[in-house]
Amino acid sequence: MHCPFCGATESRVVDTTSDPEHDEIRRRRLCQVCGKRFSTVERVRAELPLVIKDNPGGAPLRREAFDRAKLRRSILTACAKRPISEAAIDRLIAGIEARLRAENLGEVSSRVIGEMVIEGLRDLDEIAYIRYAIVFLGLEDLAAVQGEIERLLKQKYSNEHHAQPR
Image 1 (cartoon, helix red, strand yellow):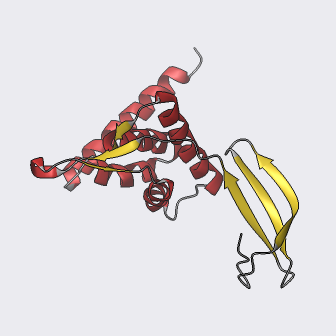
Image 2 (tube, rainbow, N blue to C red):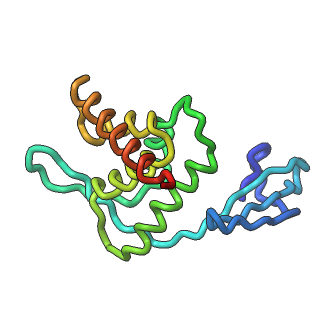
């Protein structure tokens, strides 16, 4: 482990905390050379399936390793300037990873992952959902966006109406 301040490799762990919700271990370290403290995070690296990328126009399919950072970036883009906590975003990502591990597949379509994201965003924040849906569902004009908003509002109203005690 390299110190982010001086680059030295000699450090010692001064504190360790476990975060079972995110399957992480956080370690507080002290650089033995410059004396500064820094934190590291360890995460279990369970095998996730390869992601099959759709190629338009009949080109051969591409396969690439699941990329947590790429998934996080796309979700953060949809959630930009929304009142959504980092913890909620981390829970969404961890939930998607857990579902992918539970499926125990060697490969999964990027479309399946997108469906998981859009489902999670619908429950998390409606504006983030619409932002993601514009790209993921290919909503190309205002009428299509309006149709999706109306569908979302109808679903919300229906859920609220059925949830009220009689």
